Image 1 (cartoon, rainbow, N blue to C red):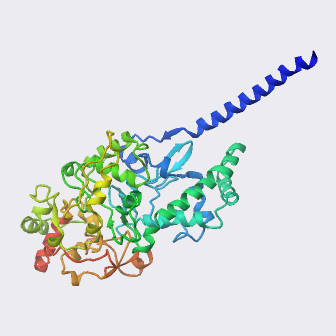
Image 2: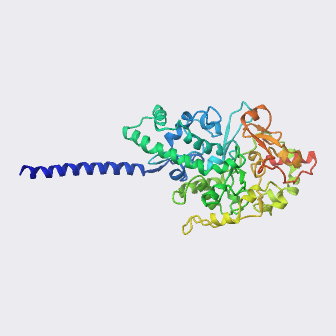
Image 3: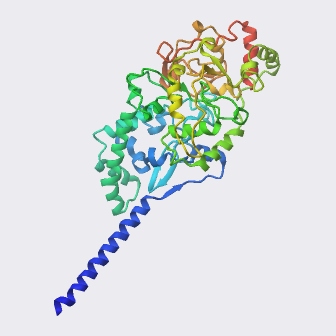
Length: 476
């Protein structure tokens, strides 16, 4: 009789424990499913710091990311952490411009538009650093960042014990969070970053990008199963400016004019940072797009000789306007590669097969791609804010506007890029001398993909005419 009475109590106790354990596990599982973006009221701040959905698939747990430079000392080019790769830290911010935080279960850090499209300028070596959103990130070594993530994960110091010790120096973790980071998050992060390193290993058999440049085509080729060992193409190109996109909305876009739908192009850029069609934050991307449509080009920061600029205007109208004025008949259109004559590696890297594959993304959804193509050459772009878009040409192979108006044999064959001090004489960044050599990346125009030939327009002008034209271009 007593035994019969005992059994229901035992069963009840076990049931209660099982239910409580189930509720606890469900609660933690639900906790890990949270998706909490950070909202920014100011549209420029939103552009610089908001997520567009790359963190779930392409993000790194923030607490792990935060201590990786400390744990993997020596794997970065300098002693100032991620800033040594050209990431921009603004006062009062724990994370750089272009690396947004989003809580998906735990805080994760990803990439956004500003990663590649926010630059810095100093007017003198001792001058204050000016941050310009929508400017090409000429100082950022994005390839170096991806390599660091992979090399740190492969480092013998990347262990749960070492990572947790570093994390706990800066953060308080609960007992449960400690267990989750030790046995789940840190091992999973290591595995994911090692896979990332393998995925981007194609970059190791191609010339280094250096700062301000990236191959945006190869990741899509890798996604669609192209053999990037047999495919020797080099798609490296400069980051572009994103200001004043409204008047460009009907233009072909990207260096080779491979798409003419601004929203689709922006979604493609988001996918290139690790987002997927399923994780895209469409509302956030729409806010960024609305802002870049009207964001103005930055004004030239030095005095302009207005009399000289006025003399340069008719020269521009005669030799440049048809391709580079907003009202020009060929602006936003593509010049055949045989005519433009600039380095053709990026052009050759884009194929109709790749365009057809990309146009299958999102099939059957409202976000379906449909406008990618193989073009015939490179794009004519308006010259607004041209001073801040140095170095020049699609591959950034010419350091200054003064150099661009010279025959290719007179353009610098070797220079240094990534230094953010401006040179108003050449209308580009300082690209030679000890400071540029120390801070910059040695750019050799004889390397495949780095050619500085072509674009021979204006080289026949007299020195006086070139001076007038450049003064006029400064005020664009």
